[in-house]
Amino acid sequence: MARRNDERRAALVDAAIEVLAREGARGLTFRAVDTEAGVPTGTASNYFANRDDLLTQAGARVYERLQPDEAAVEETRTAPRDKETYTRIMRELVGRISAFRTGYLALLELRLEATRRPALRSILTERVRADVAANVAFHESSGLPGDATSVKLLILTLNWLIVEQLTLPDVFTEEERDALVAAAVDRIVDGY
Image (cartoon, rainbow, N blue to C red; front, side, top):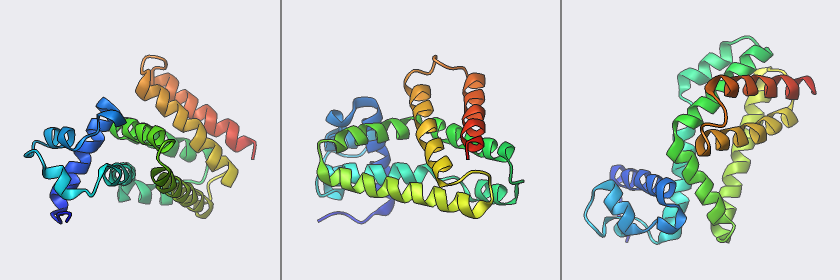
């Protein structure tokens, strides 16, 4: 029977994210999670039914931790509805995701693992679709320039920029990254 201490569960899932980022999916074991969390051996196995459960919860937790804070969302709601605001929002997004390096690397590991685990693929597909739909809905209600296709193209473009930033950080300077974000918004939104 799985334990219900929500604080301990969150700490174990956060530890799983760190293990995924550092060791990859093959290194994700209950023992590795216990060690990373600094808890007695056997603790993780008391909280998760199996490894798939742990993988799934790690994926959900990454998305939870990547959400912008309410102040940033409110600031976006009151900002001018132009490409400059759109560019600032996209820069904040890239910066926020890049700041949670281990979370994004863990998510990449989970995506690779999902190619071999249909249940995980199904869950991640559902989560990514929901995330894309939420971003499109927010954009459409915001009055910012562009359409649903613009949002999807920016998601795809910026995701790869983030991969470059996190896996090969010396490819682009921070200034180049910011310029690329601005160029992506400019070119994709102008095509609208």
